[in-house]
Length: 181
Image (cartoon, rainbow, N blue to C red):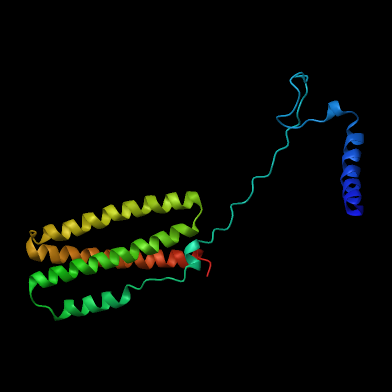
């Protein structure tokens, strides 16, 4: 009982002070509950609010404790590449290596995007798309330089991998600059 009276008094005092400071109940305006007959000539002061700084983005993936490794299968396939003499086997191996390096770049690039603000993400994606086009143009050029065929496939793969490795290094450096570790 005492607690109820204390709570009532505790709530009543601030409300009474608010009402007395406003003058009359007609001066109190509550959004969406203002009477329909309220005068339309009332001006509402506009206060410029400071735009909040963009929040620091910590990707959820950092708490996952899951980091697939591409290095072991890449090493194994590169070893196979040095030991294989048959052209079909070389082409299959270079193709698998190309896919692994491309997947590694893909994961790394998305990690980088997780840390960037929206406009920087847009710029990175735009740059990456241009780079992907350039990589395809150069790999195609390597293929055509050897008149296509099995040798062309192999050299297109070598070009694809070399360009992808370079891009992985660039993206890894950018990620190191922005990542919260």
